[in-house]
Length: 199
Image (cartoon, rainbow, N blue to C red; front, side, top):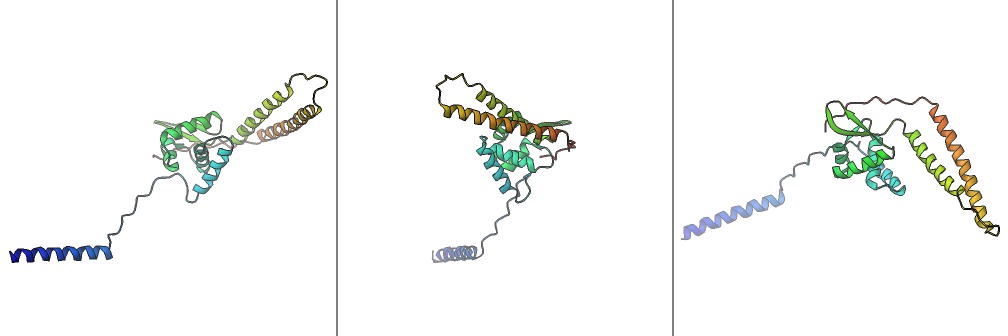
């Protein structure tokens, strides 16, 4: 019996020594595999600034991050690549991509023998954005000019307000339309579509 107790105590002493060694010399943690990303190092901060700008314009922050990511990308990116880069779900990225596509801010492209959907910033983005702004300004100007006829004793303050808004938008529409016409006279940069790298 005494011999068994001695063996048990010896085993406990060995375990204590092992635990003490582990405390002073812990096992090194394995490095985590790098996550695939289409963003260059240091680009995350810029993408977040774009996201905040888009949020102020009424878009979701995810839509802003998506556009910022594509703005920095030299080649079209698939939904899988964008979802990994933004650390978002593929469903969310797909929804926001379709929204930006309807607004003309991004465009969808296809690859031969590839069923995946790719997105990129269109080469004529400046013209598209000016057209969108011009259309919104013209529609608002139409609302201002469509004000119902007012009686003779109507407030002169309201009348002056409508005249000022109409005059201001007339100037802005003319200036933006002229800028758009000047831009269209410049040669359009044709983007050569590159084959997207597999995700």
